[in-house]
Image: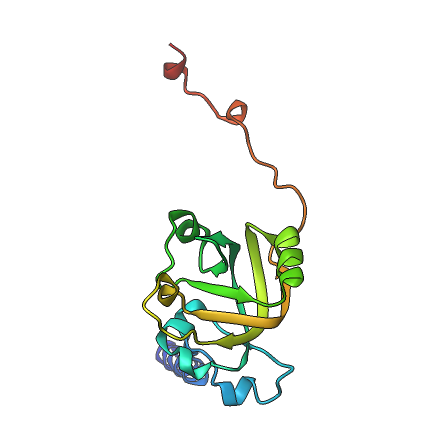
Length: 168
């Protein structure tokens, strides 16, 4: 009887594993699938743009990152740490559009985590530092915050639990 239970359990486990298919985590959707309707933007990671940016050239994309000004350019960076370090090589996208729109976006969302939707364009290579960018996101731009617009409560040093040995 124990053998039957073990065999049934093993078969159920194998069946459950066979029913589950692995979903590629970093695989970006094909533009033909997600951008056939120009109103629907492809959600793409910086990694997907770095691997094959030509697949997304001219298509509506949605990218999440850290928004700010770096080296005089209004950019979306893949991480705050890389932004703070000044890294731009394949980790940043330039935002393009009317100046008043860029200024409004800056006033609302500068130096915060956002989701940006717009048309992705590959930048022509001209031997300048702009060549380090993955490309540009052009207007119409839609920007949404990724965090709630409430002040973040940070702990102070007074909240640190002190070890009695440190008081000496």
